[in-house]
Each structure stands twice: as C-alpha cells, then as structure tokens.
Amino acid sequence: MIRIDLQSVVVLGASLAASFATALAIRHLDGGEPALAAAQPERLVVAPASASGTATQVVKGPDGHYWAQATIEGRAVRVLIDTGASVVALTRADARRLGVDPEPDAFTGRVQTASGLARAAPVELAAVSVAGARVERVQALVVEEGLAYSLLGMSYLGRLSAFEATPAGLTLRP
Image 1 (cartoon, rainbow, N blue to C red):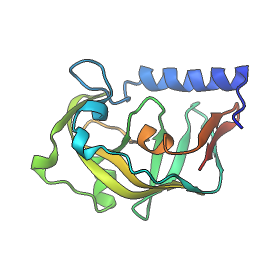
Image 2 (image 1 turned 180 degrees about the vertical axis):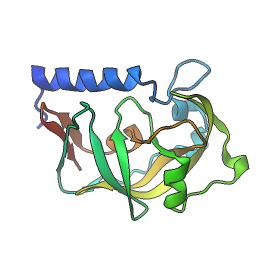
Image 3 (image 1 turned 60 degrees about the vertical axis):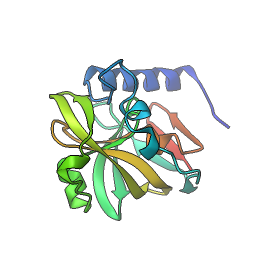
C-alpha cells in the first residue's frame, strides 16, 4: 500500500527541486532526455529480477537531502538519493575504490554535471543495497570528473516495489 499525503508530496517535491537546483541530475545533452535512456540502449537493459530484503528508512539529513550509506560491490559508499537521476552515478574515486575502473575508451557517454560537461562510462553493478533493500544487476555510470558525490538514481530506486518520502525520511521497500 502506498500512502500519499500532502506532507509526502511536499517533501518529495522539495527533494526533487533541490536535486534539479544543484544540477546533478544526469541529462542527455542533445535534448534534455535522461542520459542513459538513449545513450547506449543495448547496454542498459534492466535485469528483470526484483529487489529483495527488508524495508529500510533513510533519515533526512540536516541539509534536507536523503543521504545513505549504500553497499555497492560489497563496499560502503556514501550516496545522495536522487530521484531526478536516471541511473546510479558513481564518482571516479568511488568507482575505483569499488574495483570498477573502466578503460579510457569506455567513456562513451557525455553528461552534464554541476562542474560542466563530463564523459561517462556505462557499467553494470553486481549488487546495490541500502540497509535491507538489495537490488542486483544495477545499471550505472562512472562519471570521469565533475561529479561531487555518487548518486543513487532510478536504476536502483525504480526496481524497488515502492519508496515513500515522509517529513522524517525516505522509506525504501524491496
């Protein structure tokens, strides 16, 4: 059951507005479409497996954003939960720590970040989890430079059965 109330809508709207205002939502440069929706379709097929685990609550940070400690490829990564991002987007530094280090010729995509244009490499992550909510085979981008922090986007969130914003936090339901 998904509960929708005015507070949830306002909180989610504020979160989305903040995401867009910081210009960190990844967008396709040619027409404003999501970067991965058209960039490399043959590499972007979302695995049919659904999320597993238990529901979890992500507490809203003092800055009004939803920050989470995700486990990606078995290692902890601090991420901003960003419903405006089409996919999980990793900074180059986070990707390297995870053992994900695309070759230079893999950076075939171009994305807009807060720092300007950047090249990005599509990758598939074996598993991404936030507390008890786990999703396997998650499509992602490694952004070569210009991304301040990694983003937990819709390639993860869209595979959950639901996510709900409340004044206190964000509930993720596998």
